[in-house]
Structure formats: structure tokens, C-alpha cells
Amino acid sequence: MTEGSWWRHGTDGAVRSVGEPPRSSRASLRSSRVSAGSVRAWAGSLRASAVALRRRLAGRPADVLAAALLAGVAVLLRLDQPWPDGVGPSAAAVALLVGACLPLVWRRSRPGLVLAATAACYVTGELLDPVGDNAQTVFLACYSVARHTSAPRSLLAPVALTTVLLVPEVADGRLNVLSSADTAVPLGLADCLVAAAMAAAVWLLGASRRRLYADAARLRDLAERLRAEQRVSARRAVAAERARIARDLHDLVAHHVSAIALQAHAVTVVLPDDTRAAGQGVAAISEAADTALDEMRGLVQLLADPPPESGAEGAGGTGPAAAAPLPQPSLRHLERLTGESEAAGCPVTLTVTGPVAELPPAVQVSAYRVVQEALSNVRKHAGAVPVRVGVACREGRLTVTVENDAPAADRRPMPGSGLGLIGMRERAALFGGTLRAEPVPDGGWRVVATFRPEDGR
Image: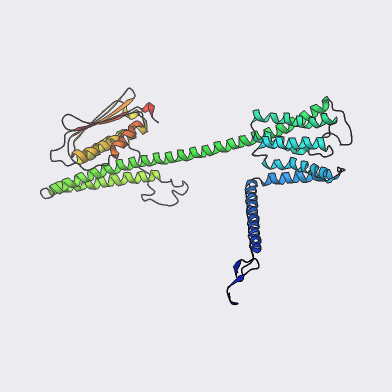
């Protein structure tokens, strides 16, 4: 090979390219890359573990702070006492003190396991290192069981606490919780009673707090339900009021507008031949329109807020806004309805029997509206036909009957919305009554409404 060749022979006879590193260098490079990858993977898993631990501890900062504070206090108290010989025993003593405090981080979610872990660390520490004193962790764990567990299961907590306090003393012969570590006190019945009383007091504190918070939660739930029921009741009241207003508006507008429409149609028919009759029809239309406006104005004034009494006269207003609203209609005003129908060309025969004037005003208003709507339907669908209206009050029951003859063969009924029958049926149902609308054999139509005043709602 020439001197300028790109290939050279190595000492071992292998052929390699110029600038290529030896095999040993490549192996070390690969191993360094693998080591770097392992380090990155280990760092990634460590970060993931830290993130997971941070997420678990995110909802309990107070418990983390309490555990850290108790661990610091326990270690500081232990520093005032002589340490055991050797680094290992000293580290074990500190680990037991800290280990008894660390489970308190989960005292709200796992109170039973926390009590078991804390009790195990405390008993082990008391047996191996009686100088250390970390009983406050076991008391807090017992309180957490009573606070976050129901009463039948939480009753094991004071028993466990009493046992945990007495086991080291039985093994050692003195009660370090109630006396200093350097003073030997024989364990007697009084010591057992004191330990049981402390455990019972801690349990009672936790159970009372649990009941207090449960009662507060129950009251909040009841208040929320009450607010929901109030909202539902308000919506129902608004819907009922809107339905009532819709019924009143329909009864007023449909009655008078149907009369106006029928009279206007009659005027267009007789106008070329009889101007006098046409003039009477126009006068009837004007009167019906004025009556409709007056009743609409009265209804609007009833719906509006009443003016203040102090400024009613001082304002000096004498217009329609200052006028008193029209009185509510009653069965005494049926002649007005029959007169309007007769003016529209429908002869009406009215029959009233019984003490109808003694009925409650609400019943009379509902009966009046039923008659009004029935006469309006006659004018819209049957035209100028004879009508018979009967109102009878017998044995506390009011019966209203409106019956008309068959319409003319060439009569084309006006379209309706169906709200009239619905409104009449609802008015009858308000007083425990019924409504029946049906055809009669001669081709006419009959509406029968019954009212029971004693069943009014």
C-alpha cells in the first residue's frame, strides 16, 4: 500500500481506517454512555417519586407540619439526656423517635394504620431507649382515630392507647409517662387507672369533635336542601302565577276580540244594505273594545305594585293610572256577558237557581270566567246561534252549563289554540270540580263545569 493510503495496518495485522479509535476506546465509550443513561434513568425515577410524594402530601400541609414539629420536639428533648454508646444505637434511637412521628402525615386518611405504626415505634423505643419520651404521637394518633372513624370501631383506640402506655412500664417496672426517667415508681392500680383515664379523655375529645363536625355538615346539607326546595317552590309559584295571568289574559282578550270580530263581520255584510244596522254594529264594536281596554287596565293595575298611600293624593293625578282598578267579576255580572253575546247576534237564555251570591268570591270569579270562555267559543266556532246558560247551586256544589245550537251549514269556525278548554278545566280543578265538553245530538255543543267550594285550594 502507498503512504497516502486511507488504510493502514495495525500492529496486530488488522486493517482499520485512519483516525479510527482502537477497540478498547470504543468499549469504554459505550460503557460510559450506558452509565450516563443509567444515571439519567435513576434521576428520572427519583424525580417521579418526588413528584408522586409531593402530590400525596399536597392535601395535608397541616399534618406534615405537625409531624415535623413533633419529631423536632422529640429529638430536642432527647438531646438533654445521655446518648447510648456508639453511632448505631444513637441513630436507631433518633430513627424510632422520627418514625413514630412520620405516620402522622396520613392520620386523617388512614387513622387506624397510623395508630398501629405509631404505637409500634413508641413501644419499641420505650423498650430499647427508655430515656426517650415520645408519647404525644400516640395520643395524637388515638385522637385521630376517634375524630375520623365511627364510634363502634374507634372504641378500640383508647384500649390500644392504654395498652401501649402500660406495656413498657410492665416490662421496665415504672411508668415513665407519669414520672421522670431517673425515678423508679412501682406500677400499681392507680397508674393503670390514670392511663385509662387519659386514653378515655383523648377518645372523648376526638369523638366530640367528630360529632360536632357531623352535625355541622348535616345542618349545611339541610340548609342546601331547604334552599333548593325554596328555589323549586319559587319556580312553581312563578309558573302558577304565569299560568293564572295567561288564563286571565286569554279570557279577557279572547272574549272581547271574538265579539269584535263577529260584529265586524256582520257590519261588512249589512253595510251596503242597512247603514243604520251597520252603525249599531260599529257602536257595539266600540263598546266591546272599551270594555276590553277597561278590563285589561284593571288586570294590569292588579299585577303592578300599588302606589304609596302618602303620595297618592299629593301627586294630583286623576288619569287612568290614578283610577281605582275595576272590581273582580262575579256571578252577579252574568247579564253583562249575555248582553255582549246578544249584541254579537247570539240570543242567550240565562237561568240562575240557588244561593249563588253566597258563594266565595274566588269560586264566583272562576265560574264567571268559565261562562265567559264558553260564550267566546260559541261565537268563534258556531257563530250567531242561540245559547242557553244555566247556573245552579245545590248542596254546596255549583254547576255551570253552557249549551248552544248547531251552527249554520256554511259556517267556517275560527282557529283556536286550545288554551280556553285548558284554562276552564284548571279553574274547575282548583275547587275540586271537573269540566266536561261534548257535542249534543242536534249538532250543538255543551260545556258542563262543576265546582266544590269546600275543596278549594
